[in-house]
Length: 170
Length: 322
Image 1: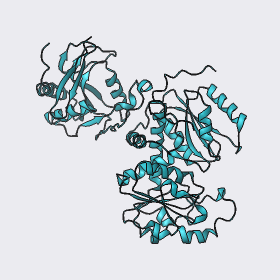
Image 2: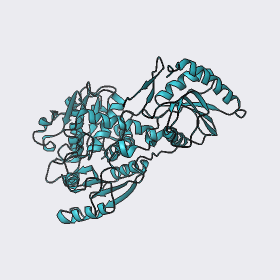
Image 3: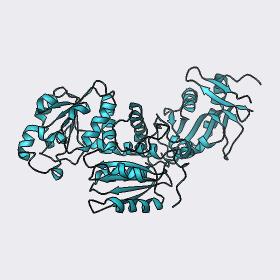
Image 4: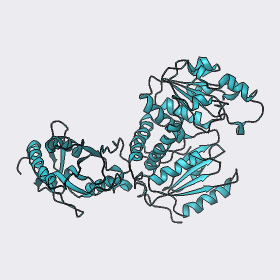
């Protein structure tokens, strides 16, 4: 197993790819960055200065749209979503740390649409690991990792940002 | 006494604020805080209780409380039924029969309001494993969601409870709200909870709940951070507890004049409905320090919190065959 990539390296690559993506927008279209609480929000804070956007980054809490509420109930201390810009008509770049089953992104899309109707939503993730359970794909990816289903990969932060893997040996 | 908490210490029913651990009281406030954000969205609704059925079982007239419970359930995407039972006493078998019927319709939660103390507790004792009961006011006993929305409003304005002096003024005798407030505020560690009332409107041994008693309005209001006015509950009064309403207002009505002895940044609260000119002067009720309408708004978030806490992670419980 190779050592885990440095988050800073991944971020600068993602920043370049995102700039190319933003360049394709329609003339005059508002672009906004939204990070999924908490890891995605840390990454959005770091990516934001690389993109020269006019509005500050938003933070999204997907808790109210999770599909496992019936099994695990309420999470305590949920930070409310904070989207300090108009969602209607904007090109939204959604940022998360790890893309796995795709369920978090599904919940995030629902939450975003509660604020308005974006022109488009693009997805940027630090780590893409296999194991999708929904038809969801990222537009910008920092690293693709081949992991065992029992491995847990996590972003530690906010400063410094660092990837960690927890392995369960059986 | 029916246990409000399940084996894991999570809220199963919400019947009273008495005896609830501080971390659970804080959890209710924190959860409500996250729901308050939902009000800022263009779609003021979350799908947490989609497919669940909440039944408002109101045996006693109420507008504000029923509407905010209904709105809370709807913002959580539950289906809501309002059952207004006109008769004031439905006891014994007839109440149980009604419960069985409503349970057979796969109700997940009963919100119960009744003029007799102990009704919500009684309902909670008789519902199936999968059903939760919330007390929306029972007689003189308890009104726990009102107390929590008051605590929520206080925390939003004042932060920590520890340094606060909170004065509850008026008809404590007939007030389930006051009892629930005293338990909640003491449970949250409030610095000093005072009650201000004539002797005839105070229950005996009220001090045992952990309050300081005042019979003089100005002495009791001195340096208070929060002033909570209670409604004079004329409909519950029997006999001559009061000389007259003008006399009551002169001694215990809140005016700009006696509010001046409280802290300059004191907030004024009232659970509603207000008797203007009886317990509170209109200039205070509508004044800059009044947070009375905020209390109503906060009631929705607090009721959403309690409903979602009681119904989360409960679908796994199998229903008894009906």
